[in-house]
Image 1: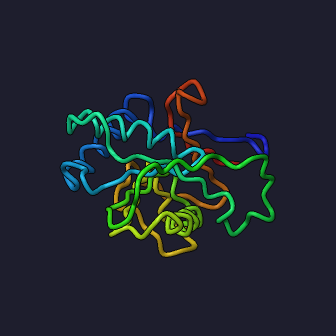
Image 2 (image 1 turned 90 degrees about the horizontal axis):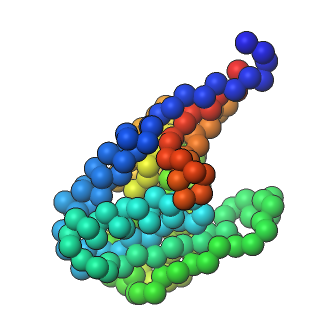
Length: 184
């Protein structure tokens, strides 16, 4: 094998991803039942592909046409905002009060925990929730820099620093798949 070659391993194929999403949606309904005092908030940019699907599945399961669902941009709350090449921040859309509600933050991959810390900082600008839970599709378990753990995880993988988890979404990438990429 050539140096700097990439090894790609599929963690979740299309079918496995759909089953995982259904399981996560059912877990949310099991814990929050009617969603009267619960809000789902996807983290921009890539967490919204997951949150869009989870919100649609939850609505279908509980038989409601509308639940509190928003999208949160954390661009200017990041601790590395000065070093990132930011072209334009995404829109934050939270058209409801989160005051005294259970809020479920949704993101695709939990790695160091820094994105979630930034999201919690941004979230308090919109009110004081009763509690905050975290749903992620992939938990990169042993790479935390902060003491943040998911309440709901679709898939857990142990990774090293040279590995990267990529989530492909049909809406953006033309396919649904989760892969682990390793430089060799």
